[in-house]
Image (tube, rainbow, N blue to C red; front, side):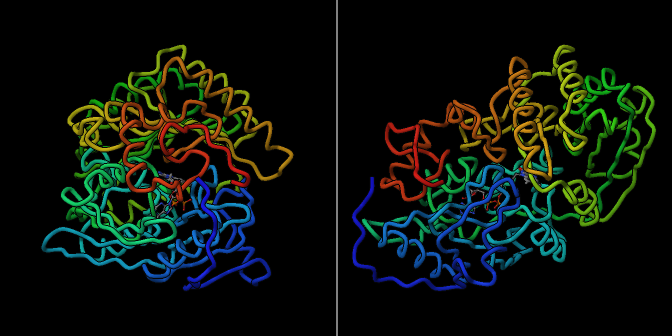
Length: 464
Ligand SMILES: Cc1cc2nc3c(=O)[nH]c(=O)nc-3n(C[C@H](O)[C@H](O)[C@H](O)COP(=O)(O)OP(=O)(O)OC[C@H]3O[C@@H](n4cnc5c(N)ncnc54)[C@H](O)[C@@H]3O)c2cc1C
């Protein structure tokens, strides 16, 4: 519902960037350079009060707003044409209470900084791989990574969130959500996705002591695809939950299949555990070593560096192994990939005592608890003239794999998915709508795939 703007009162505080400011060009950029939007103002908040002021400022003037942290939204949901971007990236304190095994993490932190600050105190949080992904968006959507099978999703380790929500007709206020207080919002903040309810400013996480881990990488040539992919699918959910692994099939032009993984344990044990994989096809490169945990995070981060700047990605979950026809589909599509940067990447999530699947699909807003695997189909490019070809390829590939996979991960959003509420949230969508109605009935926090208010699902915006 659009409210009539009142005579403006609140002023923006924090670092304010507007078109014409020397830093506007850098400040408006999203990580995915396919997205190019021109906000009317970007405010870099330094304190919670700056966030409150920004929400009030926007509401008093009837200016649309977006919330931003690490800027990694695949579809650019953290920016907007003509509106205000409320950016929390300057709010990046981390405080570790080692005795009680908790960490207070401001939501502007990128993952590399969270890993480093926790490592300095000998603890870790299960989170994602890319160093500059924001802990804000990652946590609200779930948060998968190389500690998932042992310690769960990032959101499973969330104990409390501090959030700025809309209040009354034009206001904003801070609230706390945890198991006891605002427990419905706390439920929604664990898998309901970013940007729909308010602006998270601080998380309290459970953290785990950590020292060394063992990591592996095995490379095969493409000719082994039909042997290696099914073998990884059988093996990955069957091994100890202390081992989380991935497999990535590159485009035919590159011609490789690479599996990597991380074990909470020693190199000897890891060598033994990966034996079934080493016996398949002809591995051309094998690495196994024990490293300090912080080095392992850098090893996995390397895969997310130096990628082409523009991309289209879609995701899916594998509740069952891909049958031979599905593997053939991967071969077919990657044989005709638009360029050498296209890939299919999978990570193991479920199986043998996995902490992800031990949680019920309705205990948090993240519903895909019983999936064994997560898939990511991606195409990347540099020149705009390649864009349509790449996007169409991802779209066709998604469609072709549909018979064998389910839904999508809200942190891998795709505007091409028609029934996105079911894909991202499954049975939890109805409850998410009730939470939305309670905390943001005037739909202040909205974008193309935000949780809708009332019966409205399809939302049209003039500039999003
Ligand atoms: C290279 C790359 C690697 C990735 N690797 C992983 C991975 O290993 N594991 C994984 O699970 N995911 C991964 N992702 C996906 C990632 O989790 C999502 O893109 C996530 O939403 C990014 O959060 P952000 O804060 O960086 O992005 P933003 O674009 O800033 O925000 C993403 C969404 O959250 C909202 N949001 C941002 N800040 C806040 C806030 N403070 N309060 C409320 N809402 C907010 C935004 O409005 C937007 O809707 C990866 C993405 C990329 C591009």
